[in-house]
Length: 309
Image (cartoon, rainbow, N blue to C red; front, side):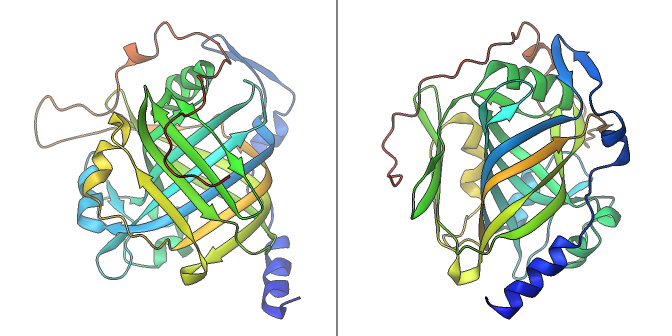
């Protein structure tokens, strides 16, 4: 074994669980929210995840962030970071579904944060990601994710494919390509991750902040060792990404064959403000009124965007 890899595994294994005590204390209790039954914690299991992060133009990324208190995570050379995460939720309270997250790494505060520090002092800088688009497989996932946590979920055609050489996912909306993400299988690093992540979303004119905790063994590739391909389509949800100048070479890629996760039932929100009167952000409350609890999926993607086997 590579000594550096062995040391990294040892250090990461010693990290305590980021799951708040409240989530452990409420385990097994029942909740019924907007007609959706939950057994706390709101969790998932046996769930594979692929992730890839690409440098983008920072000024262009800033124009996509709503209000005046979100700022792109600063990389050298005037760059920011686009993070694509696809989760194949195998076991959850609301059935199986795929979630395709397209987000910009960001900080939250009155002014932009300096480089590097937000990664080390995440709580001090409100480090997280602003979710630009979030297609999912099922109606019940839209109802819960958007109606409760304010996530910009919408139902779309999705897949999640794993082979010996690559992991890929494709997203289509009403017959139009949203995005294809394909990563080369990273080396088998099996890094034990126990992490907390923050999502910022716009809904009902408010900035919604939610937290997710997950753990699993990660296969990771960084820099030139990371191989990925991103194909951007013309679906409405990805139209805003066209001016980002997305780099072809990812900063890193990651594949976790199996994870366990918890979505915190506690969340926060703020009004999103603008210098212009009458401007609103995110979809209105009416977008979730009338949604049902169906776990059915649309037909799989049909456009040949060139994904591997």
